[in-house]
Amino acid sequence: MDFSLIFGVLFLALTFLFVLLAVKSVPQGYEWTVERFGRYIRTLEPGLNFIIPFVDRIGAKISMQENVFDVPSQDIITQDNAMIKVDGVVFYQVLDAAKAAYEVANIDRAMINLAMTNIRTVMGGMDMDELLSNREKINTSLLRVIDDATTPWGVKVTRVEIKDITPPKDLVDAMARQMKAEREKRATILEAEGEKQSAILIADGAKQSAILEAEGRKEAAYRDAEARERLATAEARAIESVSLTIAKGNPQAVNYFVAQKYIDALQTIGAAENQKILFLPLEATSVIGAIGGISEIAKEAFGSNTSKKKEI
Image (cartoon, rainbow, N blue to C red; front, top):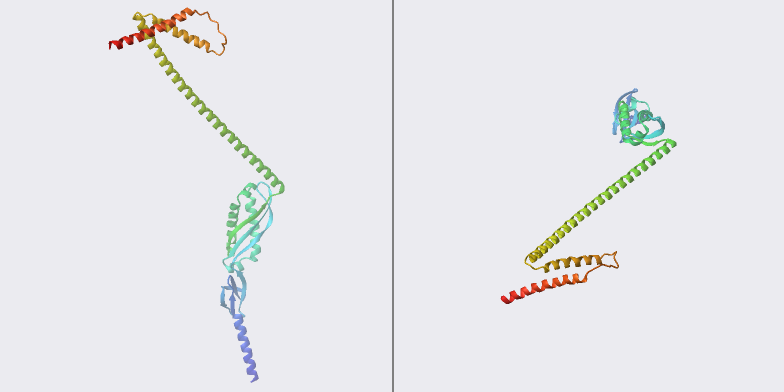
């Protein structure tokens, strides 16, 4: 009776231990490898899984989530012999747990060393200016190279980012001086362009002003010529009228014409600004006679008009 009880207790204990060792619960985001007598046979996915106790065992517990590690800072000599310090960060994800567990030993250390060597290779073949201005190109090149190298390990590299590129202090000072000189050069060019545009606008304005002034002089000359033409026409008509009067036998018209020119000449001389006192040997009787001739012409004209009205 006691032996049966002891046997039952031992059986229950062994059964419980067998179930405990056979049932495996894999958490989400992980995959476990199973080894039988030291040889890989299969991979346990997240959830409830069963293995054979004492025959199978859990080999490696691999995280299937995206992981990240920092690339330590290192000195790199560029193609133009400039010494710089560079560090970065790498994002990767395990796609095949068996390869990650058995194709490489210490995958984290292997990834770090692979990233460091490829950073030296890629960035060492570029000039300093190219490194500072083409980070996107560097990241793309590193991603392609590292991803190709880690494919046999069952790893997918998703992103590679260069965090800091630190040139030496003397190079930074030289770059600052170069930048300052470049900005001063651009400022000088812009100032010269502004002065050039200003000179062009001033010249264009002077040109337009000269054109308008010439147009004004042309218009004024045209109007002066037209006025002189009309005055000449009027004088011609007056001379023609006097000539007809003389031809009819009336000599007083000559006195009118001479007196008018005489008076106009005296008016011009008297209006001159540089003449204050004027002494001229004038014959008063001739002037009076000419004026008398004008009055005679007027009387005859008015007399003829009156006689015509009476006849009417």
